[in-house]
Length: 185
Image (cartoon, rainbow, N blue to C red):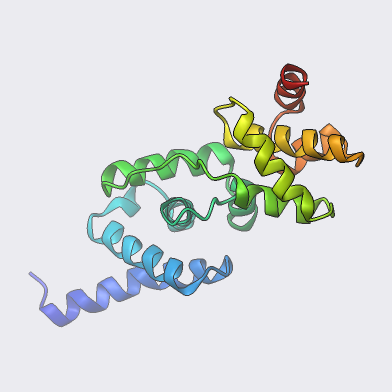
């Protein structure tokens, strides 16, 4: 058995890659602390044997952002950490099961709307109008609901926005967006 000081040093060595990986994403400090707390727990439980530290970090960031209802965009996380969407979701599921974390579905689409309106350089008053529209829509997927309500609001205001542009920005299929727009027009 190792002396206590030695055990602490080994844990610190194992945590160093997590510190540097979390810094890449530029998160709020409270989110960083929670990610690092969970990373430490994952190291102690030897969960890093199943996936790489980069994948574990990406999965933890995704889970913590969901926990704080900050609606992470999967494409941002996958771009920063160079992993696929499927791998990210698989790691997040693995971590949530082993760390007993609950993944809440994102119901609040306001965060998505604000981000998408900014990305597409649309007028900010569309957010309010799209939120009102979204309350009337019966769509399960928050991303498809966001895209549909945004396109309907923009169309009502006479602002031309390509469906393909909205779909690409949200990371959803154009077919799903078109199908739902057709259903509600």
